[in-house]
Length: 384
Image (tube, rainbow, N blue to C red; front, side, top):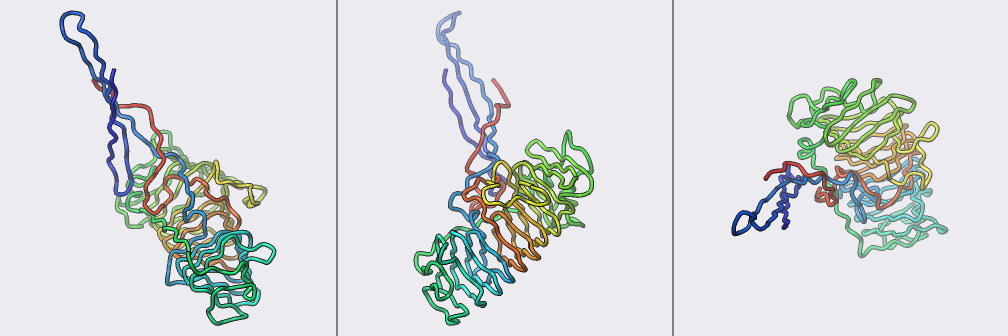
């Protein structure tokens, strides 16, 4: 008996569609005469992405701003307690602070306009502090390097060897076609309730007439061969997700949710949360953002917006990607990485410590959008 296999790929844009094409050949002596008898059988073994992918050393360990010409930052009593990465400048004003043994990487300059601004403390300095172009502070308004305790910066900043972390890029064109549930892969057998509308004209153009509501007043259960999106209203309700979901328009919520599963939800437009919570771990009336309570497993949700993101008087626990500005305001809290053009954290908001190097859903944007971890499914298409 001999075996051989060929790995084939039928990609959609950047997204692979792998399968093993297997051939087994058996040979035996011919009982009725000379020579040998041989027979071959073939089968296909499709590969599907593992539900989560590793993120070691990636942008998904940071609050990450990729706009080099814009100043991203915090104001009005914002409390930052997470790794921060800026392709451009970092600006702080009013009483905002960055605290904890975290990393700060700034490829531009850092501006601190208030005497209350601080980066690290003498007792708990940052783990890493890179400021390529130095800083200006209330005590020294001239751009200078290194930045030191005189600027309320701990430890002294470093201006050389500044790490470069590649920017993730969301492939909206590809996911429009292959997301499941999504425009090309609608709700199928077993689906119930008032089902979500993913598209209205079979064209990627962001033309949904109203924002898609993940958490409406009525229940739904959308099932496809490769994914699921289910909502049960409550206080909070339960949102179940698996796979990658795509809406050709903006998105919003109208009810708080405790989510279960791993998945990414793409909106070809903006994403808005106002006076609602979206949590992996719900305790009492809000997300449990205590350090170590949420580890990124088994539940993690990634929101991917092709536009701005606005979170106000809400708590979000998960990961955010935005082709536009992310604004977190009015006492809102985020626990999880943010990758965006630029972000603005204001009005007593905060970013909470989140687990590093956690696995993210396979639909999460990456620099190459190359899914690296795959699982074999049962053989199909037997022949021979």
